[in-house]
Amino acid sequence: MRKRLAAIGLGFAAFVVGAAFAVAAKDRPGYTKGVADAALIAAAKATPLKLIDYDQVLCRDDRTVKAWLNELTAGDARAIVWSGGGCDLTDKLSGIDSGSDWCAQATILLKHPKDRSDKPVVEIYFDKPSHGRPSPAYAFRAVTTDDGLIRFRQDFESAWLARFPANARAIKCPETDQ
Image (cartoon, rainbow, N blue to C red; front, side, top):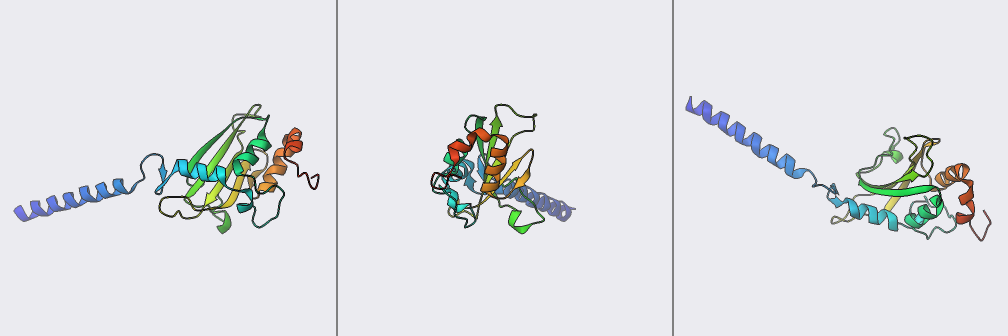
């Protein structure tokens, strides 16, 4: 009987220790897989557009994501709300769109949305971090109510300008008048 109780006691102790390690393995609030969400946000805002343009040479690609997004949405966005975490804009059927564990999202709150769900989102993907800091950004994804998942910054810009044409002057390429 004592051996049986001892075995049950050891089993329970192992369960408690295992549960404690499982809880300890989870990130504390404000962190995603060891990286501060605030660091993901800061890195996304500071990312030069050329890093997420897939080797396309687009004008004014030295601007940061934050500067570009502010210019593009000026006058039509009430606010841009940033968050960090795992990637949300993914497509598991396509390897290139499967996301990563580290992303930053910019949710655009429109001044005049079509409905409650009309909140365009831009997401910046990051590779595995180094020493708790985000790696350089490697991908851009976005979603709009009308266009669904968008893979390229230039496509998001076109979709935005189709809906809000007044912003075209603010972001056009001066050297090509595009």
